[in-house]
Length: 238
Ligand SMILES: [Zn+2]
Image (cartoon, rainbow, N blue to C red; front, side, top):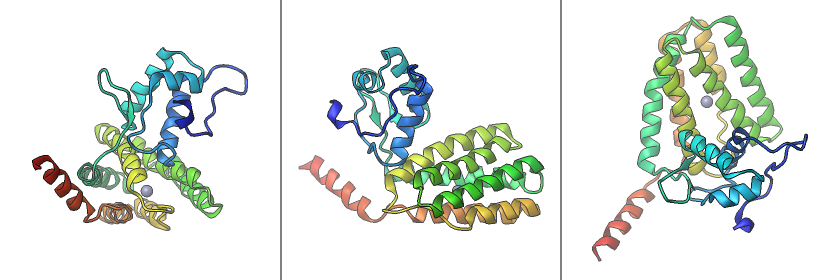
């Protein structure tokens, strides 16, 4: 089992302390986002205990959190696996996110506090810097942080919480279906912030829709799905 686990995980802290469940969550989530742990990968508790040098209770806590972040599927009496959302779920996730985030930015246009805008602009700059030095891992994190910040600022708390959830879900389906290379969309975040600053609610929503449409268009959700569906249906009938 151990040989299947990819390298590059931090299994001990610098101070010699054991790592926490939250740190395991971050590392596994990150490995999924960077496609180092592909969809469907089995995550047996015993392997995670060995890899991270922690007890089963710590691993279980981490897996429960990863399940609530849509990173893994946890089913009773089954080994946990990295989630493998289908094409239909991917499209539905984008549809839901357009609806919710579109409303969040509409309500935020012209009402964002100055310190929140400063933080959002800082995140845009960090994303650009990460892209320019070819650090895709950092770029993804900064890009997600920007959308989490919008969720956090949401005037409507329920919509904000739904958006946090949808950003997590989108990040997983993007990692799964993206084609080779970066999903960086130059200028999109800048443009959205400009509309929010201007206070143009309709333009802010339109800018956000364009951004999510472009991101979805980078994914491989092509005609292959009908071929795959057809095969499985024919297979069942045979
Ligand atoms: Zn974005």
